[in-house]
Image 1: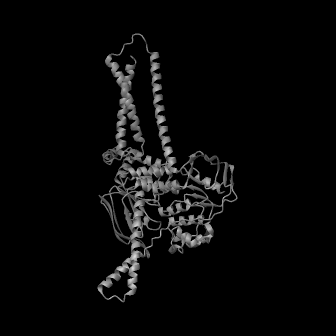
Image 2: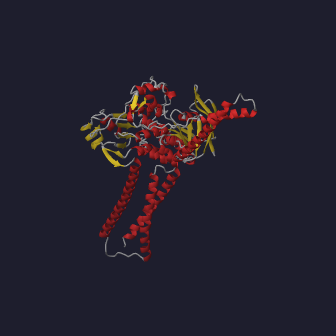
Image 3: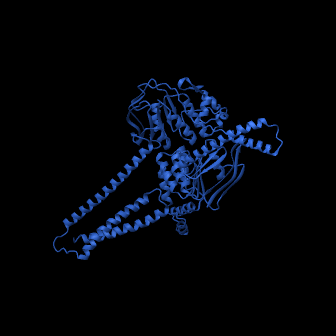
Length: 632
């Protein structure tokens, strides 16, 4: 069933074509990812589709009677609302009925409650409160009554995400949904969207996210939209095949053009029909043959100052803020070609550690020793400023005219810009005309152009498209110095680092050998084992408590005049023991379902009903068991 049809959609800014005559459709239940280089119009296309931005020509048609929600990069929240009020601030039947019923409950309006009761049941809105609490809890928005006006940028982004998820729309548009989420939140959101019944169209640079969630990839390139029916791995495979086929076609066209060019040069002005047709064919071949096949890749063998034996030493450093330990007696010595990743929840202190290394923060105790040969390159969004009125190439030339390469070679600022996917046509653009991702890329290039031998990158992947990320990864793979990376991009971390500092909280930092995925797999196994140990311990404690109670009763009840159980009662007593154990197991299973954040409202309602029945049955059978136990 088709949910969205886009026909011949065209959008321009002045004389610049963003996209032209795009035609595609999205069916019910599809989970679509849109990829393109920064500045190629991904967010613009989303805005045009949902009606947030005007397009020049074409048509956008949604199926009638479907609900649509849109998460954009810049939130539009009501400053006067609390978090809880904001996530319910939708004009949707389910939410409106629930809000009206909740208001009637608060005002003790029994007549209104009775009038709304059946409608709430029809829309299956009884569990909406618990669903909202689960989503807010997973996104670490625990203070439901906090005013939106007091929230940080990251918190506001998470409130906006919670708001569109609570709406449970038929069609969900997401623009960079993983921005401002820590790794735990990203993995939860992956699972949530994978199980969601909503049709999804999203823009994201998180390649693992695309891999897990999507089943269709659209690529916007050269004002053309290419469709790949599969996840991110499938897209990479088929894109490579498409480019290989394209290169073959262009190669054949060039060979053919050489032969035809010789013929053209030998011929007088065409008079015959066949000659004219051949000349027209030549011009068509020339168009194909003139296409650029150069792949924009970055392979730099840079010549940096060699690191000495002493590089960076952290001697029992500690740092804390009021009532919040950040680092507790961290002792570590960095070696040559160190490749360290740092992970942990937002606010755990990852960036604080980097600032201490760079001398921007002072440890409370301990000391940091830096080798004489170390040349730091420190990238974070906050510590690098670029004059908006400068031209792109001047920003890089301000750092250096040339970057030294091996064997006495050099690379100019202009060549470096091209390698980082800034074509010559953009070099003399003003910085203010760049997109957000392009500005971040330029800031990153300022750091790399200085040719450091110790790179510290704090969230370098934010707002960089997958093509630039690939370029950055190529650069860092060949980087001979030390590297410290803080990033929420799991794909990037897996490729770049060989061990990880995990911020566990309360100042504790755990050094894990291996990449991020290996760490998460290990963590899942440990959590599963801990849960199993907890279940076994709880059963053992219950058994011991039961035996103690039985022993106490046996010691206090009279021994004389005690009647014995009949054969039927003895059999009933034995059966009750088995039945109670089975019911306890079922109770545990139902409780687990109720605590699952991804459980559907139908599953929660059914589990709640069954749990009530099971608890009542346990009570009745336990009471009967106690009666018979007196005569055993």
